[in-house]
Structures are given as structure tokens and as C-alpha cells.
Length: 218
Image (tube, rainbow, N blue to C red; front, side):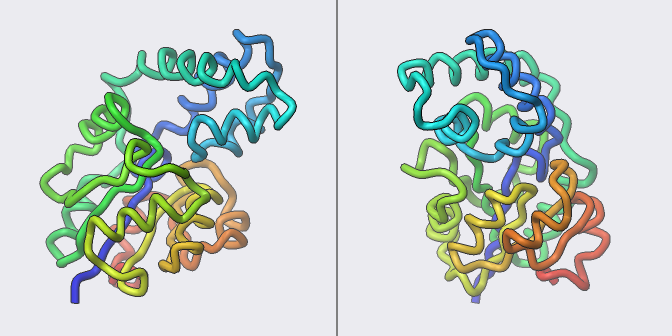
């Protein structure tokens, strides 16, 4: 039977979380909102609408949501030509592909942003499909992005592993019924990832690749 290795992208394969923190903080600041960076960091991994709602609450001026998202995209877009892949991210995906795993990305990114992330990873030959923000109605922590990734791979949940760096990833994977692997390179503490459903935790893609034989992706 086929197996699926589903990967989050931001903070998991590409070192972008703190760029997102800075650009979301600046977009919020320009709109008159004072949100501490540590709070923004904890919200990274949510889709734009959910992130704004999480940070500003239900009593915010919701007419401003699209403006905030547009401002963030414009600020973050300045980095598209130099997004840094995390060490061995591409090698990890190629190794899993060689080992017979169907590699699928599940990310809240879409459009030009997703294209920039894929260029940074530089492993398109190993990626079977991508479940992006454009393909689902609800983002993480809803299980929908992971479930859609499994549909693209044609693999049941019990034959899949989801790798991510945030509590939203772990919750989405757990709700989809897949085994969850966490990585610490997004800046979220080990304890938080475990409590959210992470069954094994690694420092980064390089650590996971070096430990592959003893991991849930063995």
C-alpha cells in the first residue's frame, strides 16, 4: 500500500516564521493595532483571516481584515526572491520520495507566495501534489488541509504522517487522524507541540533526515 508524507511549509521546510511575524506586526502597526510580536508568533500557521481574528478578536472592525491581509502580503512579498530553505529540506523530501512515500505539501500559502516557497525548497521532482489555501474552505487547525492532501495522495489517514512546526499543524493532523511529527525550527516549544498531538519531535529537517530510520517516517 502507498504511504503519504504530508508537510507544512512555512517554518517546517522554509525558514520564514520570523519574517511572517515581522511583516504581520508591521501591517497591524500601520493599521493602528499594537500587538506584541510574541503574540503574532504564536498565531503564525493560521490562515490570514483566522490569524487576524485570533489576534484582534471578534469585536474588531472586520471590514479591515482584507486591508491587513493585503498589507502583510505586500510586505512579505519583498522577501520572495530570497526565502531561505531550512537545512536539508529538499534532501529530506527527495529521500522520502525515493523510499516510496508520496510527498504532499499542506500549506496556508497560495499563489505567488507558494511558488516562492517551492523555489526555495528546490525539490519539485519529489513533490507529488500541494494542498494550498486556494483549495480548502477552512485552514489549520481544521483538518481540511490535511484531509485534502490525503485525497491528492490517494492514501488513508492510517498510512500517513504529517510534519509541521506549530500547534495548529499538530491539531490539524490529529483531527485528520494521521500521525504527527513536530519540528522545533519554527520556534514553538517542544512541550506545546507534544500537547497539541506531536508524537515525535525533531530540531529541523536535517535532524529528521539524520534520524529517519528511527522515526515515524522509517
